[in-house]
Length: 230
Image 1 (tube, rainbow, N blue to C red):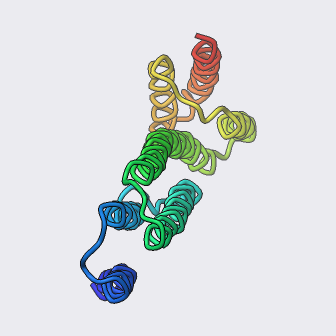
Image 2 (cartoon, one colour):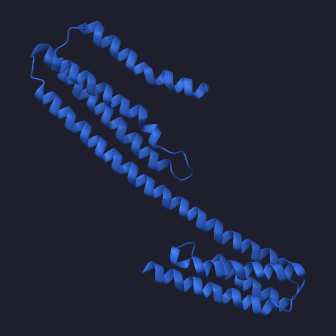
Image 3 (cartoon, rainbow, N blue to C red):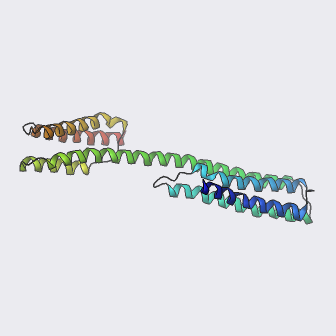
């Protein structure tokens, strides 16, 4: 709550200072050109204030948010300089509203287009990052289950075979596609079945289950390769 109050106070400081100076130095009797510049400057500052709404503080997403902040800051200071320049020039040489409106309107339009395109691109990137994290958790979860089962197997031959399976699974691709779901379900079921036999102390079935895991991994790798080129 305190942080939100501080952000609000910081946000309104510029508005207070700018408006005090604007009306104190020039009064309320302003030309259309000056009012247009006044409006565009406030619009630019509003764009800066609302930028956090399009930013996420998620892990690995800081760079995505930074690009939006930098563009908003650049636009605001650019508009501030241009707007104040028109206001100052108009005070000595009154000019038509047309060119200030066109120039600042184009600047705002370009900013909005670039900013919205970045937001869409960032959303796609964040979705990709979330997918990668989910895929990483999936493989690690299955691998950890296999590792835990391996620790409970004392037979040297079976233990070595399980170690090879664990290593292969740990080094397998983290990517996942809709086309690989069946193969991944096959792999998960094979590992879960093996873990079930280990918990029951039934080692007679482990050799076959190890082969099933190897076959399931092979099927998954083939499915991934086909999905990549489809």
